[in-house]
Length: 158
Image (cartoon, rainbow, N blue to C red; front, side):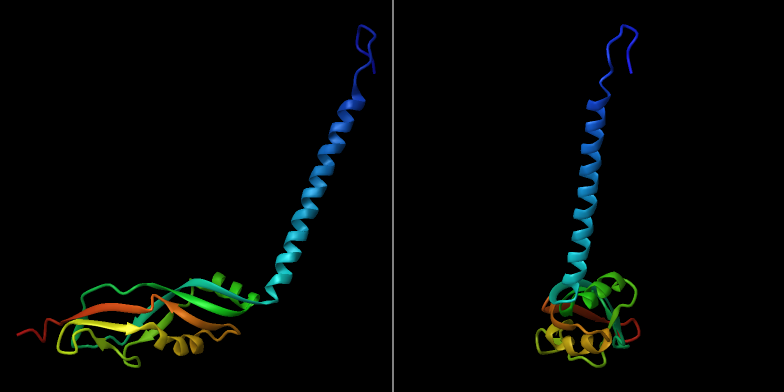
């Protein structure tokens, strides 16, 4: 190919640049593909991870009302196959774990008739393991203590 003045166009230089760009794109694609295969392979190994999982509190005492707020999510430290942990991370927002007040031990802060109470989270681990129905196990729960307070309901006030 020639210009109007008889000089040749530099097509080969442009062609070489396209070959380099194409080679970089092919390299990037296979680098990404190898990362995906490496990640899928690592999911088969036993892993330990922390996820924030939703919780729901049920069977609160009928004669009392909750005056503070309880957390809507707890941090669970899980151990198990990576596929199970990934599945819980993805589906964690759908089915919250239930904390049944009638089945757990609630400890009074003052030991008397005070309205301040707390729950030790390590006592919930076995309950959470049975609710998850997964190959992974809950190792620990954070925060380690849940503080809350009750007030008498309107019917019970003098």
